Image 1 (tube, rainbow, N blue to C red):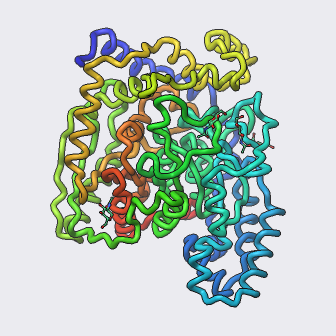
Image 2 (tube, rainbow, N blue to C red):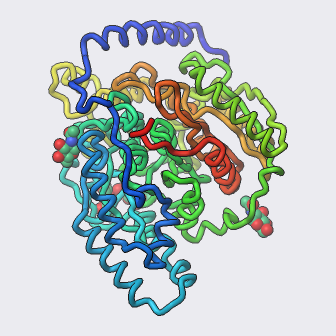
Image 3 (cartoon, helix red, strand yellow):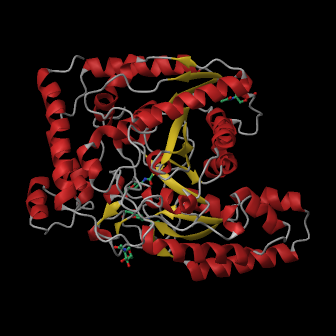
Length: 530
Ligand SMILES: *[C@@H]1O[C@H](CO)[C@@H](O)[C@H](O)[C@H]1NC(C)=O
Ligand SMILES: *[C@@H]1O[C@H](CO)[C@@H](O)[C@H](O)[C@H]1NC(C)=O
Ligand SMILES: *[C@@H]1O[C@H](CO)[C@@H](O)[C@H](O)[C@H]1NC(C)=O
Ligand SMILES: CC(=O)N[C@H]1CO[C@H](CO)[C@@H](O)[C@@H]1O
């Protein structure tokens, strides 16, 4: 498809308007008084906060530390950072401490050897945070929708019960964007979350509270969901690891909103974590019996992996250019890979990435094989009651009377304007991209691609760059597994990162690469020391 003149003009106007608005915005909407002088969270002092989930579980099993001590350290940390970042929106500290006590009793009475305890409870006693939209028994299940503010989960989502069974101890639930469809985590139920490295910046979305609390050292492992980058964007903006698994291996049951129609083929539930060594164990547990398809225990020899790299999408008119610092970091990574592993990273230019947004939009609004379309967004905004009328909500919003956020209203409007039938040209492009990526990645390829064109923007700014999510979103259409991996900090002390993509069911390749990158670039950095 060649872009029509109208689209081109629209994209250009949007860019000019963005600049004008951003300038005006910074005057009209000055940020509220900064809550502390450094504008970020303090550093994590308790050494228990600086161990991976796997290491914590090992120490608890060996009775080197009590689970109560670990959980208490995390509760204190959340109490210290949450007034600044507003990531945990409902806690269950008292229950978590009781469960920790039971863990300690179990370990004390356990007659079995350590190995069998590990086998049974690989995450014994490890603190866990959960995105509010994913059901955790006794916790709210509103997805930031005001009409659902009193809905309480009566059971656990599938992944939550798998992680609980593995021994993890949930601390509470974390903020997300309204109906999980925006990349700033702000809504009229819980307010807005702030980036731990710079409180005047976004945490991303929709699993923004997860990215934020994991990066703040208020949690070590967490659960998010991703239909356009909702795990990877928050992981990127907050400088932690986030993995979108191969489509279909991790169960999505028990979240609101859940996928419907064609979206079932794009929505993935997956882990966020501070330490790369937790990625594989988390994925193994979250995938349940499906984990067998991933051969996660198979040793990966990175010297035999074929690496490919693309530093930008080829110049889509809808998307911001990639920040120079991100491009530089990607080149540094290439150099390190070549020097350390003796591989040759091949630069590729796949033309279809330029049309990623058009492809994503067409696929999301198409019908699935049974001719079913997705549940309408305006219908979800009405919580399965009467669909809301977005233009009316916009008028109310201007008067300060709407219960909905501006991005949600905008998405509702966009849905009304969108044609529901993807052009045959876009379908062809989608197939071409799918074939090209599968051919390139084979059974031994990893593709490096920016996680997002911009480093964590200031609050409100994503409204002017709504299509930037497509750097992550395109991989939902392809179903491929992707690990977002931190790549150090920018000159302003904000996280840099990259997406590592591998072929279907080859999650172990992107995860093994993430472990290497963590060693080479230092992984997560304490925001208090940034
Ligand atoms: C969360 O909300 C959805 C939609 O109302 C509901 O179907 C689901 O049962 C709730 N989840 C739990 C576990 O309560
Ligand atoms: C999605 O939600 C609908 C309606 O609440 C429910 O019937 C269905 O079972 C849910 N599916 C999943 C996979 O949770
Ligand atoms: C997993 O291992 C089996 C047995 O070696 C092999 O047949 C299969 O292709 C492997 N799958 C992946 C995704 O590597
Ligand atoms: C900043 C903010 O609005 N925080 C809110 C987060 O959600 C909890 C629970 O509803 C509220 O008590 C906080 O005021």
